[in-house]
Length: 240
Image (cartoon, rainbow, N blue to C red):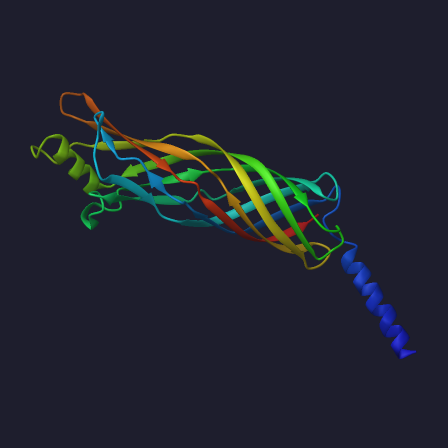
């Protein structure tokens, strides 16, 4: 009798866990650690229309809070929005711009919300559910800042040593990018789950520098930077 009761209890528990999963009509909100790792390469810096040999830029990794909202249209097809606190990236020079005395060259804050169409594999009542996703992201940048040391170095270069006091401002172009995504979710109970995902965004942008000279004219400098970041997200999710 005890063995029978144990079997019945285990069956009921197993059924109750499996009955609650990502199914049609479900909404899931998640939050967690978002890491953006640019796979950076760049063209030489162009100053006043002239390419400067052996120059380039690198961009460091950034960590921030990621937030997701997912709606399941069917047991396998879902639409997800991804956002978070915009991270700040630091730019460093390469080649002749690699001197520690002028680095980092500057920093900028990135906004990159994404929309993903995802297909979930395996059964909706399973604990483990891998997925593949495809989507799009609009990426724009704010609060671009050029370090004082790099401004002084650029001013000295442009004036051939006459002054180090010319101010330089920065603007980074906005871009659209496709998003290639994959991941896996683990369901703890009726409401709670954890997930890991990785995304790839192939895109490049331009960092535009404007240096003002005393007569009111400006000198434009441009660096084309390929970012192609790998974005990982580890999240805790709540289904309702």
